[in-house]
Length: 289
Ligand SMILES: Nc1ncnc2c1ncn2[C@@H]1O[C@H](COP(=O)(O)OP(=O)(O)O)[C@@H](O)[C@H]1O
Ligand SMILES: [Mg+2]
View (spheres, protein in one colour):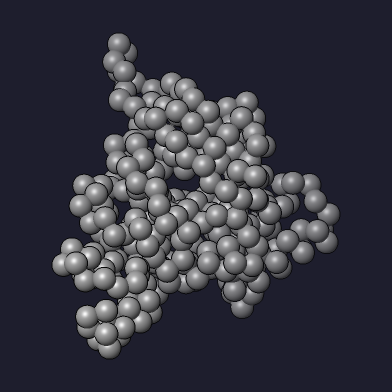
């Protein structure tokens, strides 16, 4: 089954002034995401990543207004025909800034907030909170106040809060852009775990090519509202010119792989450090192979 299905999808925000039309923020989007897939959305600022993320849970166009056309199907629903609040139960959304998403006095209350609003029993709420805290490795922090947490911990709480709704799909819009490398690694480890253990469908807008190379199944590169490239990381990151055009910096090992290829040196494709090491060792041992 497809989790996301966009076909000839166009969207523009409401015009800033009357008698003017805003340019298309999304133009001609063709995108299918399978259930259980982990897709990274990349591209320069203004490329349309956030707009596409919001189109995946119906906020675009239901909350944003503007003009829209084309197929916009999410988890089998026509995203424009289902209320956002209904879709939000199945599609969790995590934003860039964890501060703006946390408002409860403690981690556990934050994570309980969503399930409480579903009208579940006290036991069912407690189960969901425990499960979400376990998944994000937050049990030791459950009594803490959000102000006592690091950026990475806060973002993990935001993800746990989304997860406690037991969504089928998680959309994260640049969740690590304000985090230090340790916080970034923490958040990616959590996402990887969700994909592996829960077969969660994940769409992640991010600039973190190194982390994407490690864990994403697919890279979708956007530029000016369109999809420029859609391929597994090993192929996508081997196209430095196209990526440069889209303002995406590939992982350093991919630059090495691309440089070898350009010089006609044949090695097994790699996009991760461990694979690179293997490929380069092979080259060393069989220099004419
Ligand atoms: N609320 C809004 N109203 C009007 N235009 C917007 C709004 N949000 C974003 N845009 C425009 O839509 C385009 C895509 O933006 P966005 O989806 O935020 O890109 P990204 O997340 O890749 O930086 C940009 O040209 C941006 O200026
Ligand atoms: Mg954005």
